[in-house]
Structure formats: structure tokens, C-alpha cells
Amino acid sequence: MTDDGRMRRVPVRLEGGRSYPIDVGPGVLSGLGAVARANLPAEARRVALVSNPRVFDLYGARAIASLRGAGFSVSHWLMSDGERFKTLRTAERCLRFLSESELERADAVAALGGGVVGDLAGFAAALYLRGVAFVQVPTTLLAQIDSSVGGKTGVNTRAGKNLVGAFHQPRAVVVDTETLRTLPARELTAGWCEAIKQGAVGDRRLFERTRKFLEEESRRKVACRIGTGRDGSRADVRGGGRDEGRGEGRDEELAELIAEQCAFKAKIVAGDEREDISRADARSRRVLNFGHTVGHALESLTGYRRFRHGEAVGHGMIAAAEISKRLGLLDGSELESLRGAVRAAGHLPAASDLDAGMVARALRADKKAVGGSVRWVLLERIGRARVVDGREVPARVIRESIRAALGAR
Ligand code: NAD
Ligand code: GLY
Picture 1 (cartoon, rainbow, N blue to C red):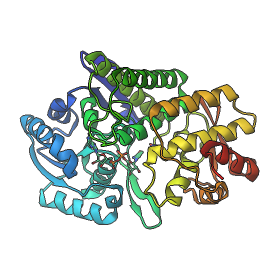
Picture 2 (cartoon, helix red, strand yellow; picture 1 turned 135 degrees about the horizontal axis):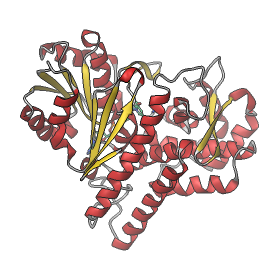
Picture 3 (cartoon, rainbow, N blue to C red; picture 1 turned 120 degrees about the horizontal axis):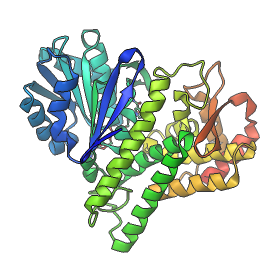
Picture 4 (spheres, protein in one colour; picture 1 turned 120 degrees about the vertical axis):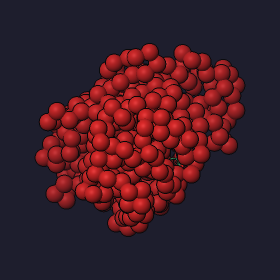
């Protein structure tokens, strides 16, 4: 990682000398044009910007001004906001926009928004002319530390989430941490759960740093007697409040932490770019699914309406850690440490009304199953994951763990 004043540059190093930068820092959106110029093909003339109305209203003008300032001709198109629009039909509309923008092989797509915009625009970029370059400009915490890095793009179908997609790596990722100031509190909590996950599966120091940051935010919030944030307007960086009273030092600390999170994700992706299904080791991309088995079951049982994805993962991580403890893999104190971190991330919607047996049945449909059996990502300790075949986890242990994690019936 290099640190250039207020900007950190994290490299993603892939096989075959392919490499791209993730630029992280407050205000780096104004450097988007220069980053695009430096990382897109020399012949690139046009950039087609994809966003949604909410994000475009906030940041579209700055993104376009920066791209134009670097000599690109820019067109833009806004998809509807929300997971339910991450579909093949929207991708087709996006492809039509790319065609109407007369994008050529050397030109590029830029995705400005959260994971929904990034996944959809990246997918369209992978398909258009059999693949044009694209740049990610993530504006949610989840997208900044996770979805914009690593080249997974795709859409949802009736059969499930992210079932159609392509691996298509961006040419650059521009993470302006100031954009988090306008993010609703729940979106921050969801992102922080994914951040906790990254430390928990592979980097104890990162986990501790994330936990401490969140606990400090929590203390600061109480000290400032800030409002409840129920209006979801401007969130503080933990989720659940407003951002009054946050100093520049905190902004720098946040940027530093996000850069470290990106560096962690970059390292995993570099070692297992396409999530090789034969791999189940502690450094495989598969370990990033920690908390997702129960998380997906919770999302699907509640019709994708009750939980943000990261919130469901928050509950799912505790369930997986409960299983780990019951199998004798994980010490109870480590489980408590994980619980503390998830609590510090913010309030999660309750899941105690759900029947543990129903959750256990729903998780059999996990699309990450291999050879018909669920692959559990469990913990040996904070910072070290272990992938365990579902056949080695007794049904009773699963039900008890879900009950303990969710306070469920
Ligand atoms: P999202 O894209 O739906 O964004 C959440 C909400 O925040 C939206 O309403 C959006 O308009 C709004 N928003 C975005 N940035 C904002 C800002 N700065 N200020 C105010 N509002 C803002 O949700 P998400 O959590 O970013 O992404 C979820 C998606 O990411 C899912 O589709 C999931 O499948 C995908 N995902 C992909 C990967 C991957 O590796 N490709 C990894 C994890 C998740
Ligand atoms: N979010 C999981 C992955 O990128 O592999």
C-alpha cells in the first residue's frame, strides 16, 4: 500500500502481470478522470457512466466533471435503485445505452454507486463487444471494501441471487470515503458486518482494528448524545446516528481502515481469482462466504425484505461461530469477541421469531453447495477459517447453533 498524503493506493496483483489500483481517501472522486486516463487503454475516448438517481444526484456531476477534465467524452444512464432491478432486463437496457453511446472496443464503462450498480454495470461491460474496460466508483461501505474489488459481476434471476454473471476485473477502483457521509445508517451497519467478516476469516489484526474503530465510534456517539438516526438521513460511520462532531482525524482513520480492508480482499482475490471449486483452504476465496450460509437462508425466508444482505451475514457469522464452538473448533472467548464486534457494527433486525428448523431447511438450498452438500465456512480462531463439508456437521448442532445465534424458537 502506498500513502500519498490523503490518498492510499492499494494494488490488486493478478496472474499474468494484470494489475489494477484501488485509490482510497476522502475526496478522491475528483481524481477519477486522471485514474481512468492512466489505467484505460490509450485509445479510450468515451466513458459511459452507469449510476442510479440517488447516487447520481449526489456525486454524478463531480464524476462527470473529472472524467471530462481528463479529456473523455461522457454519457450517462441511470438504472432504478434497488436489488430487484439487478436483472437481465436491466442489463439489456444498459447494453442498449452502451450501444447508443457508440462505445468502441477501447472505450470504457464507469460504475458509480453501491454493489447493485457495480455488479450490473460490470456485467454489461463484460458482455458488450465481448468485453470493454470498466472502472468501479463504489459509494457504499460494502461496495468499497468488498464488491468493487475482485471482478465478480452479475445479475439475479428468478432462481436466485447472482446466478448469472461473469468474472470481469475493473481497470481501477476509486474509493472516495467522503461518500459514506450520505449513506443511510443501515447500509453502514451492513457494510461493517462484511468488514468484520474479512478480519474474522483471515486477519486477526484487521479484525481487532475494525472492532476497536466501531467501539470508539459507539462511545463517541454516546458522548455526543447524537440522535437515533431513525430518519436514516446522514449516518455516522458506525451506523445509527448522524455525523456531527466527526473530526478530520477520524476521517483519516476511516480511510486507512477501508484501505486495509481493500488490501485484504485484494490479497484473497490475487490468490484465487475465480474461486476455484477444488479449493477449500484457509486462503481460498471461498472463506469470504463466512456467515453467508445462514445469512442467505435468513434473506430468502424473509423474502429479501427484512434484512440488508450484510445484516443477515451479521446473524449468519454468529451462527457459524456457534457451530464452530460446538464442534470443538473455536474457543468460547473468540465467539464472544465476534459477538462484540457485530454488536458494535450497529443494530441488526431481529430474527428471534424465525423457527430454527425452518432456517436449517432453507440453508440446504445454498448455491455455494458442492456435490450436493453445503460447505460451511467455520472458524478455528479469529483470523483463521476452516471449510467443513456439511456432512460432518450434525443437523442437531446446526439447529442448536441457529437457535443460540438468533435467539430463535
Ligand atoms: P446497494 O447498491 O443497493 O446500495 C444500497 C443503497 O444505498 C441504495 O439505495 C443506493 O442508492 C444507496 N446509496 C449508495 N451509495 C450511497 C451514498 N453514498 N449515499 C447515499 N445513498 C447511497 O447495496 P450494496 O450493499 O452496496 O450492494 C449490494 C449488492 O452487492 C448485492 O446485489 C450483492 O449481491 C452485491 N455484492 C457483490 C459482491 C461482488 O463480489 N461482486 C460482493 C458482495 C455483494
Ligand atoms: N464477496 C465474495 C467474493 O468476492 O468472493
